[in-house]
Every structure is written in structure tokens, then in C-alpha cells.
Length: 425
Image (cartoon, rainbow, N blue to C red; front, side, top):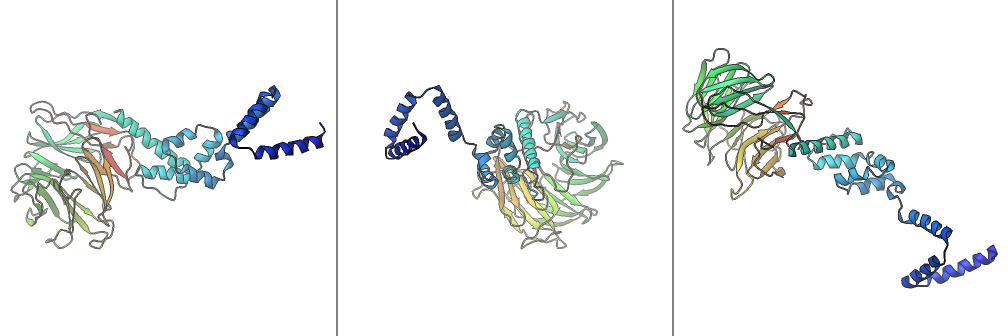
């Protein structure tokens, strides 16, 4: 057939084909395929592959490709990276996609870092840590042996751990070497805090005592609570100490003189945690640099202004359930910007400038310890330690304090480091 006649025939067939319905078109194609040879079928196969298997990610403009990628979950993104080199290149060049992935994990995003590979690495590192946590491979453990009765109190700071026991002693340990640096005869310790010169202990005998590390002598004693002292905090610059007790009160003391300056009331349960910390944000009731006192009981967290005026009034009361159906635990942390506390169902985070709950993170079991890592802290070194769990064994048996040596940060929820229940994680 001449080319001119062929073109005329082809136009006629195409025009007629367009007038058919779908069923008739399918029958027409089946008939043509039936009478086609190997060369025609090979040509049809190659043409169909190009039409039906189009690489949309390669063909789309980058802006549209990035928009589509935002809708994919992290695991699908990682799978797509394995399709081909072109897909891997496109996905790994989208900074916003990986920033969003990290943001969903709770990461605080530094917008000045626009390297997509950096944020992808952050996500992969966090996922690896979660897998290690699940498989109980995230920590190395060691034991400190020395107390002869139940260990109830501990406080960790800069590589040193202080433990208080029912054997009427407190010990200071170097967690890197496992050696006991100091040992002091004390009362039964419910809570401890120390610095280079002194140790302050709260006791089940309703008193607080301050001890000198070098001599073991009692420097000061604080009497006034009518219940066990479960928590304390102090500030040398202000010469003040605060304590929370089973008598439902918070007391403010002159640290050097041992005199009670004020008793804060309002709690209806045991006060199990107190924190004295500077605010780093501003709100209608406080300014950056103001000292803030936080006190927590089983259901509420109370916020007190702690400036020059000792007779302060409660600024705000935070809770997680109006009917007290959710119990808080004495795992309270405050870094000046955020308040974090665990409950019997998970972890809660408040913004300190607005007092609004930012996050609620449910956990499968009670959270044993939480801490907020400061933005100004350097990345943890291999010798960085976090103390998370303490095992209380039967009296008269050796007391093993489990020190979990972190390989790296566990995960970052706006720099919130959650260490889950151990003995296994």
C-alpha cells in the first residue's frame, strides 16, 4: 500500500475507532493483536511499558515531587530511596521532607541547617536507638556494691552519683570507675542533693540535714516538717533551700541559718517533688531570670514565684485530669522553658510561657525517669552516663545500683530524653 493511501486508511480507522464504546474498542484491539506477528507484539510490549510504567518522580518538576513526598510516611520514604539512583537523589535532596519527619519525632528543628542528608541521618539515628531500646541493647550496665540495706535516694551530677540508704549512710560514687569517694553516716535518706562541698539530705524522720563531705560532720539541721521529706532543692546564690513533705506542705528555709522562712500550703497530697529554677521565658506572671519554684503531688503541679518576696502566692496549678483519674509521678523536670512530668500512662510536656500542654506521649508502662537535656549541652561523649533505675533488694543483701551507660541520646522530644522502665527497658 502506498504511503498516501496508508495515511488515508489510518485516519479513517482512527476516526472510526474513536466512535466506538470501550467494549467495542477492546474487541477491536483483541482482533488486531490476534492477527499480529512477533515483531508487532514486541513493539506493542515496548510501547505499553513506556506508557503504563512512567517514572512520575523523574518527570515531575522538583517542587511537585517534593510536595508529593511530604505525604509519605518515613518507612515508605526509605523504601522509595531503594527504587533507583534517581529516586534516591530526589528524596535525599528534599530538606523539608526530612525536617518534617524529624519534627514528627519531636525534634526541635534548627532551620539554619538546610542539609537534607543531615536530617535524614538524624532520623535514622533516632530509629536505630528505638530499635536498640526495644531489643534491650541500648545500654551497658554496671553495679555499685556497698550499702547494707535498702537504697532509697540517689542524685547524679557530672559523673558523680550520691546514694542514700536505710543503713543510715550516704555514699558518693565515681560512676566511671565504680569507686566510692566518700561515705558519711547520716539518717535514713528519702532524698539527697550534693555539690563539691556539701550534701543535703531529706529523711523519713521529718528532718533535713546538711553535711560536710570532707569531715562528714553535720553542718546544719532543718526541723519543722511533720511528715517525711521526699524532695528538696537549694540555691547557694539565694541562700535558700526548699523541701516537699508528706505533711502536704512546701517549706522555704535559709540554707546557712537553718531557719524556716515560709510554709507554702495548698497541696492536698504528699509533696513528692520540688524544683527551684530560673525561668528562661516571659509570660504575664513572670520574666526571664525570675526564680520559679515547682512543687508536685500525686495530681497537681504548683508554680510559685520565688523572688525577693518570700510570702509568695501560687501562680498556676497544672494537672492532666480534672477528675484526678490520672496520677502524676515524682518524675518532674524543668529547664526554664518547659515542664515535663510523667504519669501512670505516659509523659506530659508544658510550655512554661503559656502553661499549655505541648505534648502527651503515652508509654506502655510507667516512666521511671525523665530528664531534659539543655540546648547548650554538647553532644554526649561515650563516657556520658544517665542514672535511670535503682534496684532495691532485700535488707542485709548487697545493694546493686544499676547505672545505664548511654551509647548516645535515646530520643529527643524537644530535647526531652525519656529513659523508660528498666531491669529491661
